[in-house]
Length: 67
Image 1: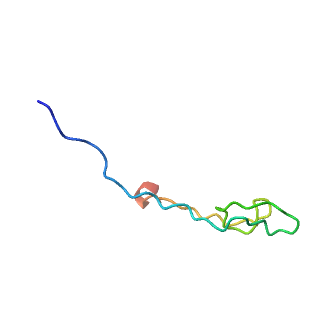
Image 2 (image 1 turned 30 degrees about the vertical axis):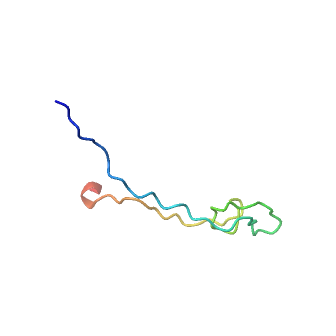
Image 3 (image 1 turned 60 degrees about the horizontal axis):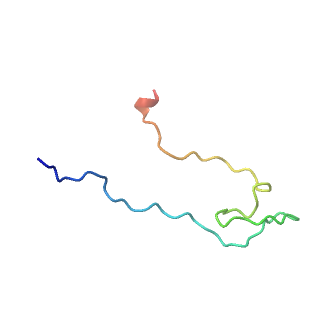
């Protein structure tokens, strides 16, 4: 007997596109001419950007698993 069933996953929506910012921006530090990426939301390049606090994201372990 031939089985005519198909297996697969449900169709899902595409992930949200990356946020972009205006192109042609330059680092705001005095004397720095580094061109910033359109994906960089800050006004400084990596070298002049002040340190930011790290915000962990993702799944949290349940209290039962953590113990």
